Image (cartoon, rainbow, N blue to C red; front, side, top):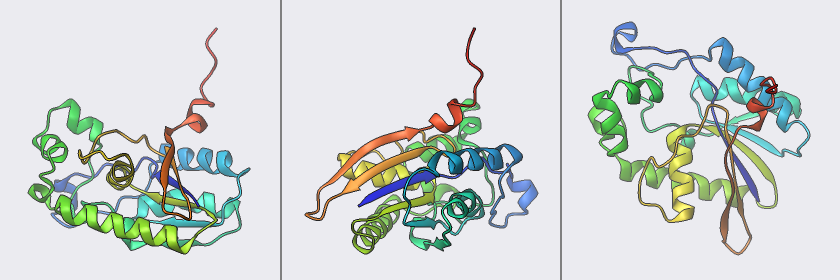
Length: 205
């Protein structure tokens, strides 16, 4: 089967002061909505048999135009929710990295429980179970799974034999494809595709 991982589009930034310490579930920004529409147009020519989504709002709103373009309903898949689903903020990773925020170092070092995230071992096990279940259930089909950067990092790392948890930076609405054969072999086909965004840039003179 073909499994197409999609990272959600750009969501609204929410810090802890705004959330009052409660878990946040931000919607997409205007740019994020445009990114999701571009991706849906890009994938419209492909046969898609099912559209799965993390329960988080940014994933559901990214999945909606893809599902609509193919006349499908979105199926919520709790197993592909992000490791920090209970976090009281959403700060873009680029911002954390640029200001050398302590959370950035905690993220890349796997100290996710420092900011309310799941343990790396629990998260990896959950993603492994969830991906196995998707592959078994949708044998011979092409499925889009709209989820999160951490989910995609871990799912693909397990195929490539990479021990590092967060080893690449999936772009908003990027596409990463894997294939799973009936005899259990899994391969990475593409990583971090974003031609649907680049195609909208003006050509250089």
